[in-house]
Amino acid sequence: MLIVAVGLYCFAALGTFAMAIVYGVAPVPTAYHREILKLDGSDKGKNAVRIIGALCRVLGGAFAALAFMLVWLALVPISADVLSAKLAALVAGLAVAIPSMIIPMQIEKDTGIRTPWRIAAVLLVVILVAFVLSVL
Image 1 (cartoon, helix red, strand yellow):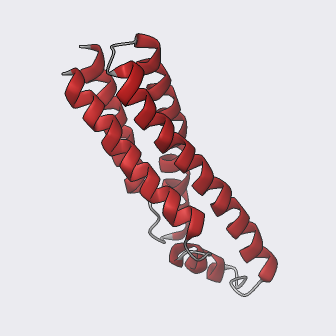
Image 2: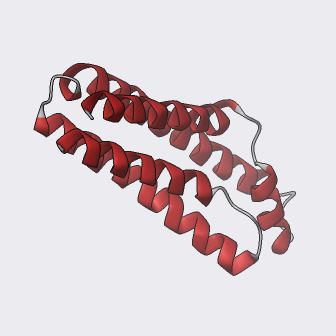
């Protein structure tokens, strides 16, 4: 079970790193950001775009940090069956996945514009399954 958990943590890290690339280097605002800004007619505002861009770059860095941390934890202490590493991966994963799911989900509900909360939901499930498998 532990080898499957390690693989799932690495899969979660890969998905998280993909999100890091999207938010860290892709053009901003993203398509869904532009749609949301248009609701208020502020899609042309340079300062709104500047703020969103800055937040996206920080988010990208945080996603990259989580991805690297998950890989290291999975391949080194988790694969050695260290409980504190399993708990650290769980807590860090949940700390990122839960708000990354709930907040965009609420924005989608409020605006009707599709947001990427489903990706965070998948990350959440993968992290939870990995943790459970790692402690069995």
